[in-house]
Length: 607
Image (cartoon, rainbow, N blue to C red; front, side, top):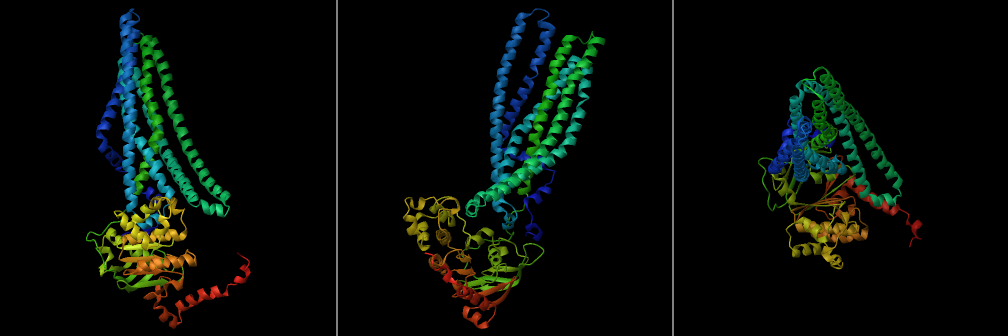
């Protein structure tokens, strides 16, 4: 069961607690499906590194032997061999870039699929505290950087390691004393890298968070563009966006400042090698001419690039390494968030009658305040019960606890006398239909949105559900009928059409328990009357819970509960509650009193 303290956690909170140990092992397991491609990529990298040693070796031999002895034929043959090697190097580079990137993209796709599957399994509470834009950043930007690391990381580490060792070994064959002097400066390079790493990691992490903030603001602003235009608040939205945008610039500037210092220091040390070779090599030529001459010095100066080049590659790779590590940590942070799990002894519930019972249920979203306090009631199968009361009293929370969107703090909920904790989430939710005030429709066609209630539904079942929801006639009047695109979140539809489409979806699902959470409160009276007919048809034979502010819509309910501050204050039929002269009667009369007291005469001129 998820603890109360877990409910309020955001993705950033999980980022802090990502374990450092085991990250490499977790990362390398994504290579397993692509082992052949990986080893082929490494083979090409190895051959590319080995072939890179050929030029300085041939150069030294040419300077010491071929040119002084006028061996033209051997010189031309060496150049021909070198040209052939360069053709092979071009082929190796092609393979590394093509197959390596394909491997990285496939690994990225695997991680994205795993992350999406994991997001689908996370509890309802996770989405209460995390913005869509932040999660999208982890799904796209972060995983792109991880894929780049997956491809370039092993190659760069392998090539730089081999080239560094190979170059050092070759330099020793020219002059081991001078080689040791060069090698002695390597610890300085690694010391600078180690000192700069922490600062860079922190800076890049912050810039990632700012990118998530930009995406969150952008997603929110685009989704609400019609409200923005209606209120002429374009400048306000621009200011909000610019705030996040400038935050990103500031965070990225700090990252580049840390990176700039790192590159400058590392570059200085790398270029220092040229000075060391020139000074030390000159001294050896002057004082040890028998063992070290100008040809050796020239060969050494050419070969030193073999030693410096992989170090420079490592420097250029370090930013990508930081991005990839940061991205993978953010990926792992979400993957490690516990998903919803069924109890070990949970079983599927098939075709439940719909008897529903709350027994001393207490619930809290956080540790500060209980939203529901010791709530108990029972709804017999097929009956319609309504829940009324002031906003924030706990009515919608009751609806969310039935399908186990949240775990209760104390007490138990039963369906057909079976605790919901002993019922699998999928079978429980398949038995429950929910119609809410804020209807969510997917981008697609009428057919696709209705069929969401039963993915394997036949065409006849979809049409029958649409007819029962009183939207079939409208759909067939359109040129493309059921294949008509409804736009993003059904933007092309009216409020009533959206609601009827959602009702058709529930008809197709055919649940035993129905929850109507303010299903018609956002509609005008005429549209509400039409929708009520569909809802009346939908409620037949089902256990129904109705949450409503318009008390006129629930007068015929079998029983009405008045919820106030998480407790049931009154219960009974409409007539019984009116006779009690309590909270319900006050609520009911205040709605009609407000309507009667409103002076419509001022609006008589409106046509």
